[in-house]
Image 1 (cartoon, one colour):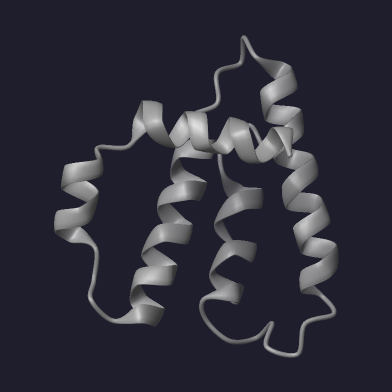
Image 2: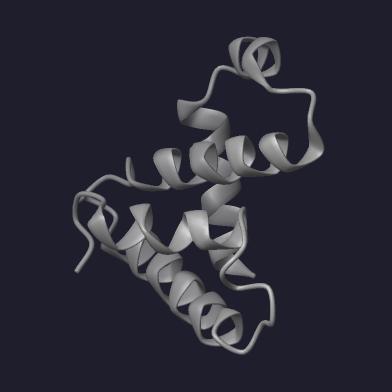
Length: 93
């Protein structure tokens, strides 16, 4: 729950809602991928001065990843899109 709130706070802080809406694709699958990548982008901007926030986000992603591996559609977009950028983003191991 805390990681969700942290992610939303980063989204409000680092995302331009008007610009985002203007660039959001109309296709539902494309929009889902666009939203997912935007959320991952803003979460990589978690400040080093808030290590608890980054830890919350990391735990949420790890829990999601464990659930994801049991999902039958894991090889299909948009789900497969999130497994590549998160671990390779700055500050992630």
